[in-house]
Length: 244
Length: 373
Picture 1 (tube, rainbow over the protein chains, first blue to last red):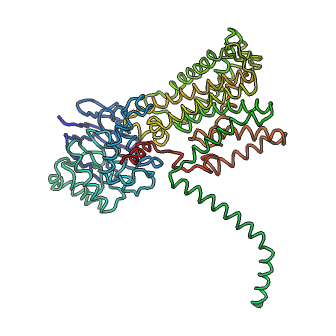
Picture 2: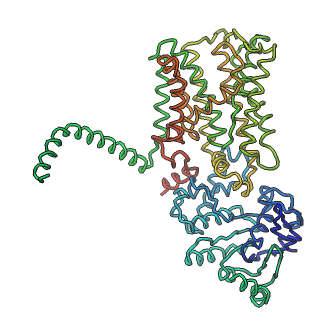
Picture 3: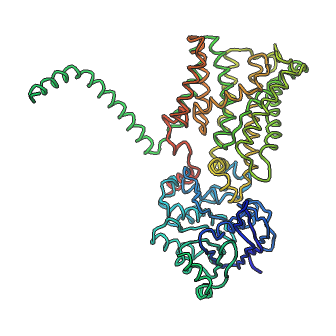
């Protein structure tokens, strides 16, 4: 049984058909890349999965539950997590507090008011910061970080709730080559407990870390398969050549 | 011009300017020193906020000893309004909910306790203050439930217009309702009592409301620095983001809105007994706007900013209305505009840095860690 299954998903904005019956299946502990030219509907499909957009048609199921009508909060509580395309760390809070904010999301109200989980979550906060190479700046405001570091902080925040599925929308956007390499390294260990759907322009990056790929073109699925299958696919090569 | 001449002229001008320059340099040095001092203070991790809070408390405790009687009465009113300002600051400054109708909770509690005193002869402080608080809480739960608890987050415009409409409607209702005294409101409310003691205007009433303000302030301080406060910070900065973490953002908003309503209710009931009458304005748009100004002026998102803003706006209005009878509202308006334009974080931002204003929620843990060997 797949972890995530989106079938026949369409999204129409006025006269624009952003998605036209797209489908996506992601298994457990699978890293799945979503690629395609600009405007092919990658981000829209991601948003429909995460709950930021409601599909015009089609259904999305997650861990055998139909979540098409779930709010983002309900999806998060079911084990899905999203890193936005635009970094949305909370700039005036410290790195530590950004992570704590993500970790305590499911604490009860009384626990929050009386700060009962603050002590217990401390080790987890520091572990996450260490894992993402940010521990030495724990008590600085997130606004002081470089763009790449903000992206890492955001990935750390997205992973804080121990999701079953992490959705990453262009995690390496605006990063240097070195930062991209490190991002790949940072993502590898999460495979043990988490699946990943990743939208990315950097095809080398995606080839390195993904198990399977889905190619979108003009809102439709052009091809889906393992990395080597997609690389050998004639029509995929054509759309990339056509646009290049 | 020959070079030597120009040099001589400069020398003469220099002699004349020497004194002024020296003064300017001295003033500049003092400024630099103060700046440096503040910087070092911040660097050393020492906090500005407790100093400001302590100074404010000392000033508040000493006020009735230094002020003439009629000014103590005025100061009591200001302290009550500061309590009201705290309620708005929690809602707007901490949770980012634009409540343009905070007076609805303040005024309805005022009317509520006035009716208790008029119709049921209930003036006992241990009954009327909880009753007023409860009235504010109930109204805020009802309005907040309607405005904030949708399945999807409600827009800022919806909430601000909704609260504004609530306050306006209450004002109209009070004006037209004979039972509530119509335009004239409810006059001659009997004084609040505790056992045989009657609280009339003066130092006793002042210290009572100051005590209440301090207790409520400390409770708010505890709340906004807890993990719940961290969630509020997230809510204020990026509501959508924290919903994606799994927070029930709307519930958090409704809760803080209700707490704000309860505090406004407490302030409103004190106000009714202190002034001895209530009239439609206290539930209306004027008072609702006034509290927004207090908080913006002093500095939203800091509790002490709300208190300081109230004291300064009320104090300056009082002084201006005495000295510039005809044009004081214009002067006050310009002052407020200047602060909002050039100091959007309020007067408190002159002494308080951004980092300390936002605060650190893991700081205690950090201190513990540093203390451990």
